[in-house]
Length: 341
Ligand code: FAD
Ligand code: EPU
Image (cartoon, rainbow, N blue to C red):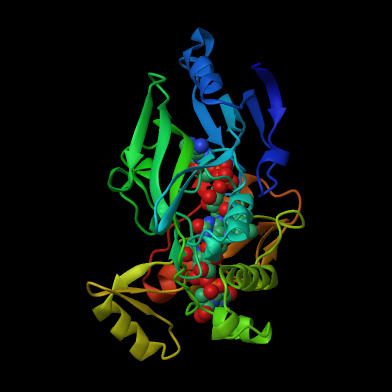
């Protein structure tokens, strides 16, 4: 049963904890719900904002149209081969719950993505990634509903045009589809990804060696590292990394490295080097900065935070200042990862 409400406070529905209101609000628990809402005459011309867990949005004003919170649940095994398990999850399933389900059942592939906030439906939007793994490595296909026509469509891996924090849904098809379910191809025989960051070190501290390594141990190591670095949105408002890590040419990297010998960089092939934006921001002196209730996290400079009553514009103003400093000092543009509404 659809319950369309007016003037709904969005503060509980965005992890930045920004105080903004939705003119209209509806929660859709099924694909049919979505199709019904999209066909209602009174909302045909209203702007629409699709929300999952609200962990990657910055609300800069009240939303003058219809906010649709996608709440489609359900996880099911849909197919099995000698080597793989195929699982379909509803777009509203909590991402971390899906990771735990897979880990508990021995389905390998997404254990490094443990504890990323948000929903399954939003995960392909920016091809979520962490600790050496990206969603696309375990992605098979997704279903989505066209916002204009209400028609259902399937997108294969190739259709989604995944990149680093990118997909076709953030570019050419931005604002055109609501993802309703995602199908994953998981491995019966795991390939362990332990080389990124502090994973190996954390596993050793946990008493895990090559002999007793498991996907469960990896997920636990990732959870431990994330808890030590990233602010919990239940305590301090944030949306994870505010900016993407910029990619520059090898020539630009070599020139900067001569000037800043400590500059970290990860060669990506094709003459491209990825630079940790957190390092650039820390070097320009912003780490731990606070103005009113908007700040730069003291343990992770890539995360902007709301200490309580910052507005979306307060955060955006701070983001612009940080961008300007990084540009002035290093000649590098850092772009937001967070979706600014
Ligand atoms: P929302 O914030 O609700 O939406 C994000 C975008 O997707 C919006 O543009 C929205 O309109 C759109 N959208 C949402 N659902 C749908 C749908 N069903 N169909 C179509 N469009 C939709 N991200 C990483 O990649 N790696 C990390 O390690 C990581 N760590 C984080 C840590 C913290 C503490 C926080 C707060 C965030 C972190 N993030 C990370 C960002 C965030 O968790 C992901 O981007 C997540 O996928 C967002 O899910 P969501 O459901 O909250 O999306
Ligand atoms: N660093 C600093 N100072 C800081 C923060 C980072 O110098 O304050 C430098 C250090 O050199 C560190 C390096 O940056 O070694 C990398 O830091 P970290 O491992 O914390 O990762 P990140 O590059 O800052 C990225 C993702 C995260 C993801 C982690 C782990 C982006 C934009 N962010 O952060 O994703 O969890 O790697 O894989 O790619 C998110 O997208 O919201 C997110 C949190």
